[in-house]
Length: 438
Image: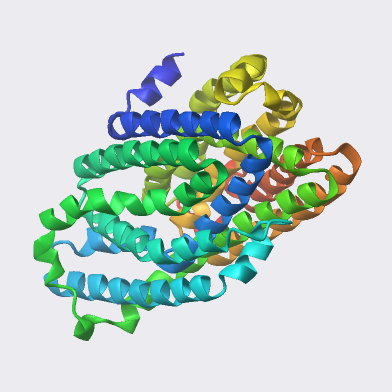
């Protein structure tokens, strides 16, 4: 317990927690309200369709922004006192993002019918939703570009305020649309809710209006784009492939078992996402920057095991509580129609536990830009997830998808431990760096 208190009392961790706790709670409460509305007004079948659309929208948004967000934040923070380099960074990322967004929007709009047939199995009347997505996409990209500027300049307070207001606005619009238009309203809310935040972010643009003059076509530099390319490819790979695999698995459940069962799996994924928000926020805002600072295996080992000794037991206890309260959680978050979701909790929770164990270490790939390590392990995990899902679904039904989730992360964790075995378990000399031990 003393170790837990010592770790939590770390000044950086307190700062991270204080900056994000309100925003996280708002997001989770909003998600729970939305899930409840979908369950009562639309049902499990609608949940499955919304899940497919959400996965597709996430992939398209990532392609439109080229996965540049983290790289842009890094270089804006680095050059914020250097006007010349800052201008090159802002100009290069803005125009690159502008071109990619226009291309993606046009492709979505003019191929709406084809996309509809892929993400809405057996449903052929939601092409207009894809067209709305194409129109809303540029606003999402502008929003993310503005966020990256404010984040790079450490404008955390305004970012959190915008996030909270945007989440409240998005939830309000979603609930109204679901109540008025049921499934159609829910689908429209998925494609416009994040773009609506741009209306709030305009305040941030006004506060940063002096930076707008730095964005010039003549300042676009290929060297900046090249620097950002590794961040872009790593971010895009996961952002595109994982949602598409989720769509493929959900569609397989729909075709071979039924829409309701696919909705149950989506409901389980939603619950998983809600409780993982706390851990993922901690990993992104504390562990990733901390690993970026570390330049030797001894500190890396210490950081990983310190996390294991302090945060992981609390996380495990939380998962146990969720498992034993799963009946009440389903009733409160969804409805009695979703009772079969109870059978999916065990394997999903076990998989998420191993997932957190593995990504604490795997964040080193991002921190040290270990490009090929990241790509190869991601390809491995995606292939295992898809193949095992198909095999286990055929044997165990929809529960097989959660069993595959567990199996995938056990195997992924094994690979991660193998890659970092010398850094985590080997004898560490006095002078060494992580590249020599991983």
